[in-house]
Structure formats: C-alpha cells, structure tokens
Length: 384
Ligand SMILES: Cc1cc2nc3c(=O)[nH]c(=O)nc-3n(C[C@H](O)[C@H](O)[C@H](O)COP(=O)(O)OP(=O)(O)OC[C@H]3O[C@@H](n4cnc5c(N)ncnc54)[C@H](O)[C@@H]3O)c2cc1C
Image (cartoon, rainbow, N blue to C red; front, side, top):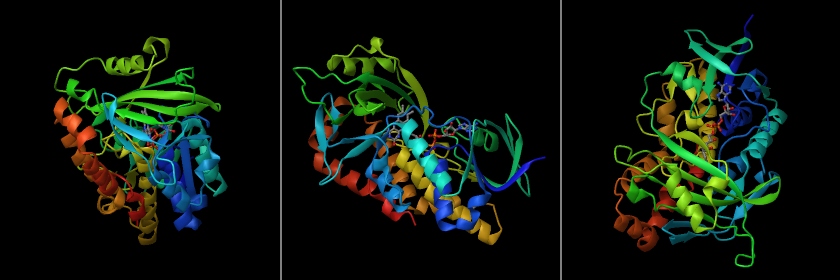
C-alpha cells in the first residue's frame, strides 16, 4: 500500500531542507505531514566550493539557525580579477564569504529539520513522479509514496523536472572542482584566507571564471579550485575546460595532474524556466541557480522560503495548481536578483573581448560595486 503524505520533498539538499524548515515555521501543523526523501546518507558528498554569501546567513538567521556551528573558513577579501589583477571586495565588520564543506553543512541542516519535527528518509532514490487530478504518486527504488503535493528539490540533474517537463529547454553550466593542500612555505608563511575569482578565460570563449578559495577538510586548511563556464559562448571554439584551470593553478605552483578533478553541471535561471505544474513545484537548482557565478546555496535557501509560503497558502485554499508560484518568485527579492543576474550574464560574457574584461574588473570598479550591491547582494531582505 502507498505511504500517504501532504508534502513530499524530493531531495535533502539546501533547497529541500529550507522548504521544510520554512513550512514548519509558518505552518507548524504541517510538520508531521511532511516527508523528505534523500537518495544518499548524511553526511553525503556534494561537489560544491561551499561559498556562503551574506544572504544565505540572513535566511538561516531568520530560521533561528547559527551557521557558525558548522566548521568553516571566513574569507576577509574576495578578489574579482582579470589575469591576476582587479577588484577587491571587503564587507565592513564581517567576512566577505563564509566557506563550509557541503557534507558538513547539509548534515547540520538536515539535523535542524529533524529537530523541528520533519521526517527524512535517507537512502531512497526517486525514480518516477506521476501527478494526477487528486494526488501525486512517487515511485522509488523502495516503496511507492502518495502526496497531495511534491517539491522537486533534487538538483540540476533531478528526476522531478525530467518527469514533469521532459521537453523544457535547459541551460546548464559546466563546472570542475579540485581540492589541494594549502601551500605554506617561506614565501607564503601565512595561510591565505582570501578568495579569488578570475575571469581571464572569457576571451577564449569560456563564459565564466576560475576560482581559488580557502577551505578546510577535517579542520585541516586546504584550497578549493575550480572553473565555471555558463556555456553562453558554446557556439565558438573553446579550449578544454581543464586548460585554463591548469594554467591558473600552475601560476600558484600547483600541477593539476597531481589532483583528482571532479565535474558537475549547474542548471541556471532563465526567465523562460518553467517552475511548476499542478501539484508539483521546483526549488533550488531544479528551478535554476545564479547564472553569473553558479552561486546556488543562498538561492536554494531563498527558493525554500518562497515555496513554503506558496504551499502553506495552497493548503489553506485547498487548491494546488501553483499557478501563482512563478509570479510570486518573480516579485520577490530572489526573483529580482535572478532576473538581474540573467541580464548581467548576457552582457558580461558575450562582450568577451579582453579590453572589456579589463575595463570591467580593473577600471569600472565603483560601477561594478554599485551594481553588485543593488542587484546581486541584499535580496534576502525582500523575500516576503
Ligand atoms: C563544483 C561546484 C561548485 C559550487 N560552488 C558553490 C559555491 O561556492 N557557493 C554556492 O552558493 N553554490 C555553489 N555551487 C552551487 C550549489 O552547489 C547548488 O546551487 C546547490 O547545491 C543547490 O542546492 P539544491 O538543494 O537545489 O540541490 P543539491 O544540493 O544538488 O541537492 C539535491 C539533493 O537531492 C538528492 N537527490 C537527487 N536526485 C534524487 C533522487 N532521484 N531521489 C532522491 N534524492 C535525490 C541529492 O542526493 C541531493 O542531496 C557549486 C556547484 C558546483 C557543481
């Protein structure tokens, strides 16, 4: 016999857990009627550099959560460079970015959801979603489940989106990541806690950047390196994605061939993205992350806040079309920043010439900072 719930959340990453935590906060009576299905077991690996921007911390604070409980490294200065030179960003009296490891962060957030009364079943892989007029059936590698509504929080490769909108256009970025030890020697005696984004690959049609973050693994200082390519210049000839990352690492004395390289796509936001069908809505990467940087943790947490409000109201009305979800998203601070980031992506990457990238990151710094402050940061205050 099917297991019946009101709300089934497919995927226990930041978007699914945030949806559950916000639902419990605004509609506590729903807590025993929510189930999260997660295919892995916490603490599970998730390829991610783990950079949390201030908006992520603001959303967590509003849930009463203190992310400093999770092992982290605080970045004082974030550098946005072209070929090693550019803009430095510091936030007065606080860190610019907080770097966590996703195995630790997601396990912590799952524990908080459980403490709030949410049931999470680990080790269950969702195979198929079948919505009908009165409920949704979810087939898994274990038993089947039925629910009034489904939240697709299963990430960029998620099965939910593929089942409910199989022909929807898909914009995804390519991303590679490498973890290395920190080089601490007589030339660099202090552990470098700055984070670097370098846009030098853009003129070669890689519409993105390389990154170099401080991080920790089992409390040992490490560096996390990577390269992000939105794919907006994919119609042009490009070097192998690994090549610019190898060049950047070599500039700092690392040989890329000494380390394991891992890759994962990121589905990014575009205004055309469909985010719901009756009884099913999408959150996080399944709906679309930030296209400029592939920044998706704060965005996933933000989707959870908006989706929870939509779900709570739909239960009050007894109506589950989710017709208004896309408009609700668009009007929120999250929708506004995603739309602005999509426009910025379509300017800063297609104008790929070296002179423009130098102008942007080295010369127009006050303009870039102003645009970032208004359109990229501080959106979490407007989530209602
Ligand atoms: C290399 C890389 C570096 C990144 N660096 C950053 C960064 O520094 N800062 C930042 O903000 N963002 C970063 N991101 C993006 C960020 O990781 C994502 O945007 C974020 O994880 C999205 O959260 P989510 O909950 O939507 O999806 P996910 O975190 O992908 O969670 C989805 C969950 O669903 C589960 N799942 C999937 N399929 C099924 C299934 N069939 N059945 C059951 N469960 C399922 C998965 O196991 C997983 O737990 C990076 C991404 C990559 C690839």
